Structure formats: structure tokens, C-alpha cells
Image (cartoon, rainbow over all chains, first blue to last red; front, side):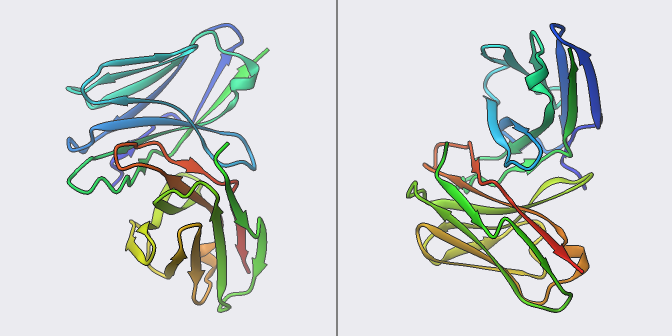
Amino acid sequence: DQQVKQNSPSLSVQEGRISILNCDYTNSMFDYFLWYKKYPAEGPTFLISISSIKDKNEDGRFTVFLNKSAKHLSLHIVPSQPGDSAVYFCAASGRGSSNTGKLIFGQGTTLQVKP
Amino acid sequence: DAGITQSPRHKVTETGTPVTLRCHQTENHRYMYWYRQDPGHGLRLIHYSYGVKDTDKGEVSDGYSVSRSKTEDFLLTLESATSSQTSVYFCAIKGAVAVDEQYFGPGTRLTVT
């Protein structure tokens, strides 16, 4: 059972426009959410995160929105640049008593930004 | 960049042979993780460690074992490799308990023929 889902395998946008990547989760115990970016032949790199006590977190061109009632989060990239072309993974974790930091990842969305 | 290296970076092996992948960190971080990445599945946790000699299973641990005898090294062993273990393997590290962000190594591409 996929607890974190990215239902769009791919997304194509024009340079300068907004990219919106979506992620849904099913486990209400998740309380921290992260986005990672991955280029081919490299490891994922951390992009931005959000705690469940917030509904928005912004870092430069990247903003993550969290809708807890809908169990949905999204990553907005404005303006999109060709260098943003990569695979984007959302991930979730639940603190629990030990906080071992185990992350559950979505399947990934491949973003292509066209010049 | 987090000081994480993985070796080997690429390996081709035959079904039934043992394989060990190494993850080495220079950050002195407590937590280390092994994931595999497969098309349509994203990254899935195999095993993780929360200290020297302290390890636990992830969601896809069957067929894999791990060891951590030093803070800086986390080994992933496939006792008898199968074709279903063909994948890209990533190691990750995490520092403090209160921090959720993990930092990943460059990956090992393993092909089992």
C-alpha cells in the first residue's frame, strides 16, 4: 500500500512559468514532509521541507503548501528554469517516540522545463 | 555537500553470488540508511542504523543484511544476489534526532545477471 503518492509521472512547463508538483499521503501520523530533487546519476538532494504545524514554507523560488485536511502537499517553483529539470520526490516521516527518521517516498515526478 | 561516499559505484554480478556495498561518511552522523530506487516505486528503505551495532529493518529488507561496526561505515550485503535486486542503491545520513532531513550519497548501480 503506497502511503505517499505522486500521481503525475511527468510534467512539462515553459521556462519562466510556474511548476506545480503534487503529492498525496494516506497516513495521518505523518507530521513532517520533504521534497527532494534528483538529477540522473546523482543522489537525491534535499530541497525544502514543512512541518505539519505549518501550511506554507517558502525558500526563494520554491514554496511548499500543506493541506492536512486533504492530506495533500504541493511544491511550487516560480519562475521555472531549465536547470530545474529533474525528478522530484516527496517524502514523509512520523516523529513517534524514537524519531528514527525513516522516510516514506513517493514514486517521483519528472519535471521538464523547456527553454 | 555532505561527506558521503559509496563504493563501488557500479557493479555487475551473477545470480547467487554475495555482494557487499559500502557507505562511508565523514560527518560523524548517528543515523544511516540504505534505500533502493526502482522505476514506479521511488525510494524504498531497506535497513537503517541508529548507532554502532544498532540496526533495524525497513520496508524491503528481505534478502539483505547490514552491519555497522564503526560510526563512519554502513555495509549492505546481499547474501545471494537475485535478478530482482537489480537496482540503484542509495545510502543516506541524518544528524540529530530533531532533524528530519537526510543527505544522500551518489548511489551504486547494481546489475544482477
